[in-house]
Amino acid sequence: MISINSKLPNVGTSLFTVMSALATEHKAINLGQGFPDFPMDQILAELARKAIADGHNQYAPMAGYMPLREAISQKVESLYQNKISANDNITITPGGGYAICTAFTTILDPGDEVIVFEPAFDSYIPNIVSCGAIPVILQLEYPSYRIDWDKLKSAITPKTRAIIINSPHNPTGTVMSDEEMLTLQDILHNTKIFLISDEVYEHLTYDGLQHNSALKYPELFERSFVCFSFGKVYNCTGWKLGYCIAPKALTAEFRKIHQYNAFCCFTPSQVALAEHIKHPHSYLQLKDFMQKKRDLFVKLMSNTGFDLLSANGGYFISASYEKISNMGGLDLAMHLTKTVGVATIPYSTFYSKGEDHKILRFCFAKKEESLIEAAKRLDQIQMNKL
Ligand code: PMP
Image 1: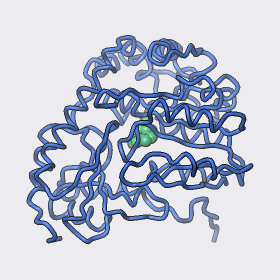
Image 2: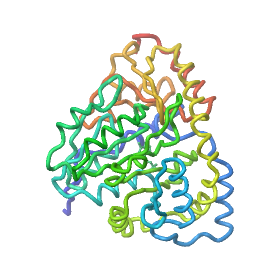
Image 3: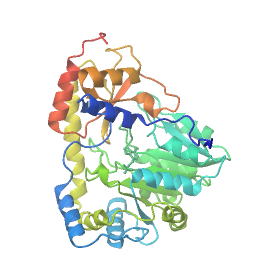
Image 4: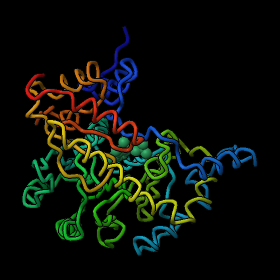
């Protein structure tokens, strides 16, 4: 019998997939997986239809459709005051997750260490492990979930090859401040450590906070792969289109991996986006649109037994269910999906050792009706009865 020496022996099907399937089976409202249940940007959809009709249906250039890269470089200059080159610094990728994975593949050798903060988006650690590298895990402590800089300094060793950060953060909704980015820049000064900055929620900052991209800090950018997703900006996560911005030499190596992997991305969506992102309103209005949803969900949930944590960015808000149940997070999430009709994601999913702090994550990037109906169902749960 031929057998595989698994690169990921401890990994099964991701809980996002499991919970979405369970939600469909039980006709539950899916506040689990992070995707909108409302239509995508309709102007963009029309532009994509037009791109197909106009015959943009063959391979795009390996690094991405040039007018799209040019539009991104203009956007980056106006938002983050960084003059990047469309030619040398931007690579269009099949999603933000692929950009992150390719960045890891580009830089990691077996035995390298990568610092990861938990709770963490679920792909980071498997990406690192499949390169033969070693994740070094630091905790973002409840309830602020901010980086402890002293712990970061003491975790750095001669083997540290990279650090991955994510702001706005999934699942906690924290947004890194200017001061924090400067502290990170200082800590990495004079080291050979790369930074992977996951910024897929760049336009989703609330309460007057701004997004502090690694692109804004010249010394940080020198060592960075900054990863973005169009899916999260235009509510079309199924397009799986994103991009990576990195200095020229890093981009050259990144493209060596990308060209033999995906090679290039779906052309019509790139042609459509090249036109659409020239209009800043298309992405600048997003934060108000999504903040209204967060605020509505917070208000609706205030009557329930869940204690919501704060979330200043991203698609998600989290809640402690301590007053409601003694169940483990996974069991409760399954139970709520099957019997109450609301799917969520337990925080244990975001910890490599499955720590359970009795917290569930809710995605509020959903229709108003979905949020209202979900909160109504959750409000019927009696305290300590589950
Ligand atoms: N990073 C984070 C933090 C995410 O939440 C997601 C999507 N849920 C991704 C990366 C992946 O983005 P994409 O779908 O564009 O690959």
